[in-house]
Length: 438
Image (cartoon, rainbow, N blue to C red):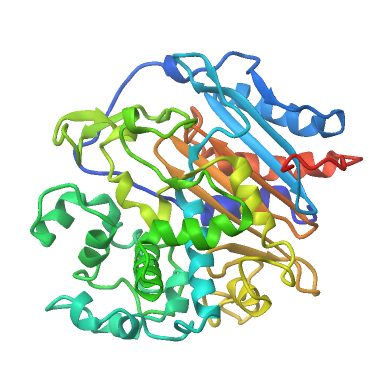
């Protein structure tokens, strides 16, 4: 990459989407991370290729250096799958290796899926980017008796661009308060995505909608409700049938929270902080359980962070956006709108100069040159999971998934590996002509 790698990494750490957060009642287990410490030379699965050795070298080194239990990487070039390999263990205790098609919780990479679904419905004329959210969602059904009047001014574009008015750093993230959600909803735990969104609407906004960027999971829970209203389908079914199936992705689904309910081929998760907390749903409600299996409201993450996928699934989805003319997902105009620069402060510096990178509609965007090309990406982070999906301006797409979140120095894995994958891609001299999709 032309930009300094350190600067890119710093920006990425800032902009990466976090799917969850701390909850009250969480305890921290002490002691060494024996259960999540892989062997020095992690196992490798998938079809090798000598020309793509820079990726092998990077992943084996990274997994060993940062004591990552398991990881997977897939790369496409020109919409062809040229690389797909697994590293380390999907299940450390059982010594089950990560396979190229192992499924992981993808956390906030769920947001691009939701964004594409919304942009499809805009392309169909179901609603417009500038429509006010609570003129599409019936205000009488959604707005509580007492609410911040600024809610009525929020537009669909603002939800997509994280400028709706919620700032979890200034107040808190409502997704981390399932007990408060249940109290306001006047129902027992567990709570679902709609419950969380309705709870957020009882809170004051942190800033005037549209005036600045602040990453918000609530924005995307509301977008999930818009998808359901406009399509007449449940959110998960819509995404499966209209976003994923048309491009051949059949194994993605919303994940389940309990370890004994993990999907076929799904990895186990290793929280870097080994946290425990009271269960927020199921038969173990209130009991102390691992944070990754029941102490966070994972199944309520849905449209902002609830999907599971393999790296192969993700790059197949990403490569379906390679050609605006032939894409099965979006029209050229709606695809361009998805990656367009926000007006005002969200897309510009204080002096009016365009920001080097910004958040478009569901994706981080970094323009490259003056011909419309850009690097677009999204990361994800929840307990036991760190993820990254990149669409590069030169026709390369890649996805990397980990079944833990941070290293021993508390550094987010996706932020650490981001510049290194660019380096590995640049080190490839001759790309294979094969297409592993076939």
